[in-house]
Length: 401
Image 1 (cartoon, rainbow, N blue to C red):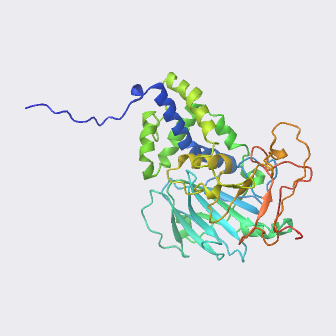
Image 2: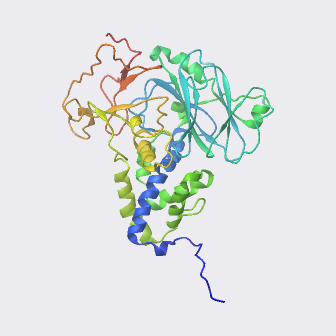
Image 3: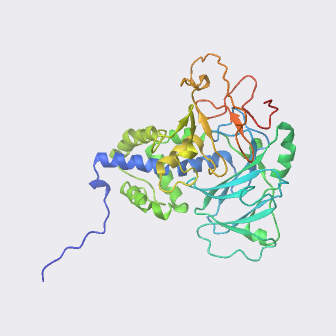
């Protein structure tokens, strides 16, 4: 009988890729994996133990470098979940007595998969059972009602923020922070709630600049780290096409990344520099500006990125940990009304002292349901050092208008 040829099931191999293909795939792979690698380094810099709240009992200043664009309006309580053993972790929140708060929950890729707090679950005491992707059981037998929360990845970043009404309000917020709990399921079923948090400023975090350390990674280190992290934190089902492209480069979940020297050279000298240059460039259509102000929330799906990998990396670089637009908006201004860059953004130069005025016409104070503020950042998106150590001003200050 005549022979018939079946299509090959073998995917494209590295040897079949041109140098141009390798660079192109490398750029896309770096952009795709950037938030996951940054998440891992952020975890190591901001926390010392998994499944434990790390509290910041005071507002940050210009020395804080662990995440870009921190705010001075809330006090932070952060934790990284490790659900890789298959056991759920119960997060307990206290009655906030009317104080606005939010616990933003991000998967390992920086997608917000849950928001706990005033807007969504209210201000009463609550208990939330976080279940990793390998948990197939039910949350029964607990002494208190537990709301199930399914986490898409084994690693998750929880960022708690509680409204601060000025420095004198810190003790009250600190008392609330100390009531946040995080308990493994077996202990919780046994009647225990672990509210022993750590003081992030007193040895509870290592410090450092995760963004800078990622930028300094070689291709071998970056992509090997990415492959290792993908074992416990696999991409979502819509990312199958991207996973196939990663495999063409030899980036496979749970496997060591060992390309040839030639491929590493192409990635180090071609792909990674190109990706670093592309990430800060605004993805998609040009955003609408009003007198120089830029609202990222109007253009990009912050916190819910889908397959918009460029937007996800862009936000990770410039505002890692940004909330869903339902919870916060972040208008950004980098130039004055005549289009001149703000003097505080002149990096490495003796900028002239300039006085700026921000005018709100009568009746146009920002319409918010919680709070608003104006915060000063430097060129690297950290709080800007200044002689009076004032980093923000807002609705809780004694403004006259």
